[in-house]
Length: 74
Image 1: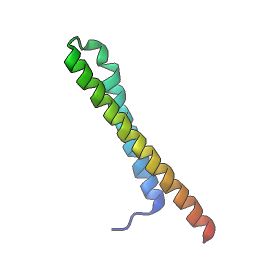
Image 2: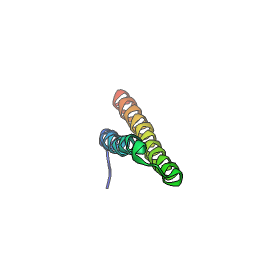
Image 3: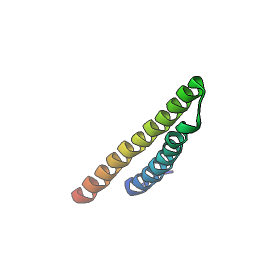
């Protein structure tokens, strides 16, 4: 199945927004945790989702750049 560059940009944006939402939820719920081990694990979990969101942003930007340059060359 072929996915166009514009569709890949849209999918990347949706993926990034969802991942940022999970990361934000993780970061905002850190104040409720009193156990230091659980707090460390929760921070790692939130940072992992923030990393995934940044990967989505990068791939979305690359897809957008490809779509923009491909349409100019046609």
